[in-house]
Every structure is written in structure tokens, then in C-alpha cells.
Length: 54
Image (cartoon, rainbow, N blue to C red; front, side):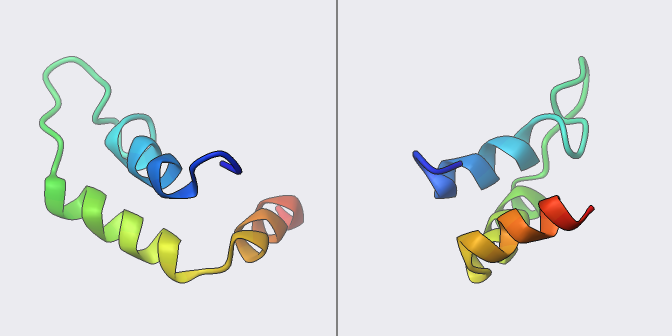
């Protein structure tokens, strides 16, 4: 994530998080872009601290 935070949020939503990396799955571009938007709205340190808390 530190190298390219924006791409990180696209990659996570495009693949494993919603299961779009499974055979036959059709990615929803709107869902991916919404995930990206929400991720980019928060501070990077807040995202990190959220993961640490869980």
C-alpha cells in the first residue's frame, strides 16, 4: 500500500475482496470505483490503524 495507495484500493476491489477474481465472475466497475472512492477519502494512517485494531 505505501508504494501506490490508489492502485491498492483498485486491486483489492477488482480481485479478492468481492470475488471478482473467480472464474466466470463479472466485475462491477461501479462497485470497484465506489470502493476506491471510499478508500481514498480516509487517511492512510487511519486505514492502517483500523487493520491493526482488528
